[in-house]
Image (cartoon, rainbow, N blue to C red; front, side):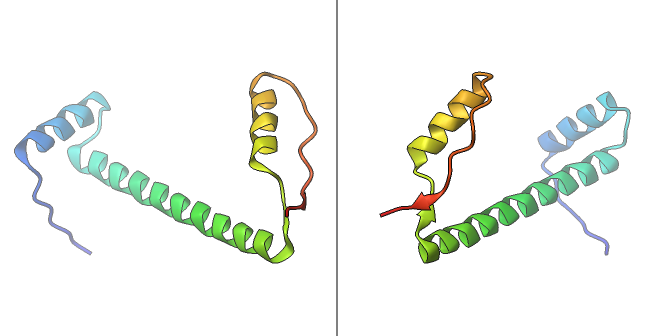
Length: 92
């Protein structure tokens, strides 16, 4: 599939400069940038789909972990501790 893009001159100059700095062609640089953006958007969509699935399961079962417990757990991990993960339970 051939695609033609009209790139503003200032963007084209930036792409050429960055591509040269990475010892690649402007074409290869743009392909890599597009590929990275597509992969990031696919990952974002998968993340949101998983979140919707988990929320639906939580609503169906009533099981969950309060946000404040999750935050406390993550803060402990970030501080270098090794706390036990919080346990899901019925949320009123």
